[in-house]
Image 1: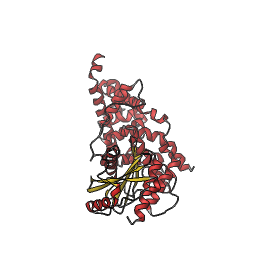
Image 2: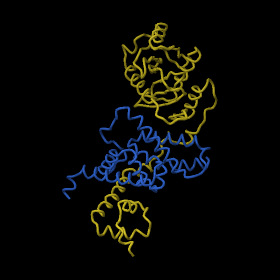
Image 3: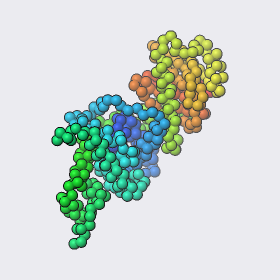
Image 4: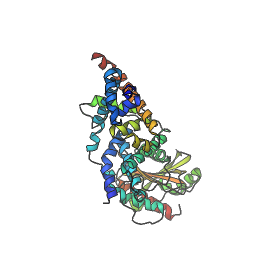
Length: 162
Length: 256
């Protein structure tokens, strides 16, 4: 296997994590990763060095944007029950953060996940989204404020008992 | 130093949490947080948020990578070109082991393919379970069926023999399609497995090849000369590709 393919392969687990949080549906997430990989492999000859990791995240972020655009014409199907197999003892907290993520607009969710979950720098996220760093920072601030409000709003009783 | 007096901005608080703050400013921010409990509480909540995200999603990294994402499967190339791009896509599909987009146009704009496939799968699921009325016109009246669907759909509709795939024509019906009427054909094997072919005018020019599954059903889409086709059946991908290939070959042979 070529060095390029090895580098791509090494990124699959992290791409799956990002896609899962971005799409919040395991099947859609893996379809996104698959489409990302197919595109990356097809463009192997076009990739002349540079940051492979950012490039893959850029493809995935754009594919998700397109997917959501085409979904906008269809009624949304929301899961009624959370049946995530990877939920554990921290299930409630996991559900809260998942629900809070779902209330974010697309760009803000992507920024929050890229910075917080994937550990990207503001500069990298700006390149991935094709916007100035200032835009990344304001999206991040709005995302954090929104998630905070959403989590606190959903569990007022818990906070009162404390 | 007068710099110490510069108030800390919201951007700096985020940068502090994300490790993006210049090292020389860190102690200023820490002093600020000690004196401003509301800001300290916000910073704390952002850290808790990060922890919750990692708790929820880090486990994905340790899951085994599903087979659909194995690079070896994704890179295998079509072996040869036979009738043109559609046939090549079918070959690539079988060889590639279920790659979502095997052949795809250069543009990334959203296509109505997904809707088209879902319509076809819905029709498939609705009618394959029918015992008494699966079709409007039975396969024994093939000539009439073809003439009727051709007339109503405004394009040549063929209901070919698929004996090469071990299938017999059950019959067909007319359905509403995305832009005008759609033809719907049903085939059945001796063992009772049913496949349907949904076809309607489609704006896609290129030979998109798409595979999808829904529960226990699978569907393959391609477009050829302005008509989109969806072959639906069970979730055995190779069997589905075999049926799709047989259908494509027959239609191609008879001049589609």
